[in-house]
Length: 144
Image (cartoon, rainbow, N blue to C red):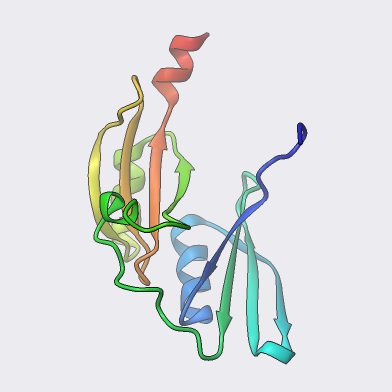
């Protein structure tokens, strides 16, 4: 597979309306389309960012939490499967502060990443799903 590009991340949520509202307000996403799969009582919405990535939120009747919500990326790495989604932003500190103001919870304050020249931070959405914020501006500048 040589020509694949990333399209979207799917996140199962307890409250589709609340989650969609938060992602639209906090990340500037817009509803691309809504859908339902009636035989399994599943509803969803595909959200689109101005830069082209998508977040698919899914709500299914009877769903349950997979376990305790991880307190941060170190705890998330103890579970297999989805750990976080990552957004490349031009200013990690500003993005971190904006998401906190929008109702996210801080899970890792902005800091240097293990990758040279990169800054990072983590927040959790209102349902506890982790979102990494990363700024590769300095690393990209050094590469050119």
